[in-house]
Image (cartoon, rainbow, N blue to C red; front, side):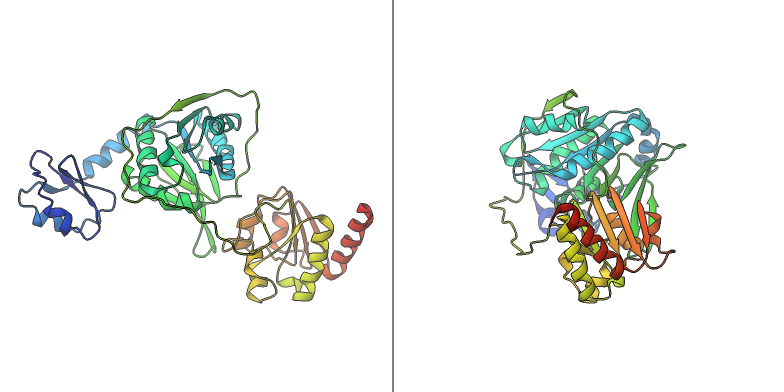
Length: 399
């Protein structure tokens, strides 16, 4: 069900505006319009003196959606930018988007707001066939309303079958609004995306119930199929310097917003560790035994030129700070080398590191789940193995 306005009956008296507890009614050109904040409380229906507001039965809309699924075809990604530079998560989305588009025999589209043409060209080199670029100065700083307006318009015009965005603060903020306006489903924080071979539906996989299960979610009857993807989980695609594509410049007629971004303040946490950008991570779990064990891991990390990570169990024990935590409730990482020391490999931890290029697992228990994702596995005592590794690395580096 939904609420709608008969524009020919609406006199613009604004009685409904003050009655709505959710600020879901806006005035445009002297007429009332219902937006995505509507919670269907129906208060506006009872107060409208002209009877212009009414309840809409949406069964016919559902049937229309189902019958028109064939009209939706391509894959579209929303490419974030920060201070005019395309964010890394955009290239990760292009990687998975390119794979999905190739499986469907479709094109890969990208939407870039608030950046220049150089950013659009980079998206093409990383796999996009077509980039919709809006360089309007009002979009340089992220703001929910105008971003949702522009992206919704592009989706309605292009009719992509799949829409992907990063599960970042920006993506989590405005992508649900876009899904609400399109009246379609949205799966948040996905860690895997696949195409069903028979139905061609998007299989959206994400942790559920605190990471105890991995849920596969489908949206078979509505389009587009929308998902936000956890950063650092997907691999980048292939970069082709000579790749060509089409850049379409967007010029929205009116960019309206109920809020204005005055300034953006970067948080200064004082934390020196940067797990997201680290190429080598030496991580410890409950098997590290305590601060003494993490001291050994720190020595190996320093010898390798890497940083120290940890499982939630180690952080909960107070052996190392939360800023080092890897996993579902910590950071998602994708280093060249991930050395898991004394980590059993619970699904909550695997979600945060399983896309690493090379995974080396060290554990006493040969049945530990961590070995199922490891590139190399060492069954043994980390207190014996880590000092030997550290010594050998220092010898090879001449330090």
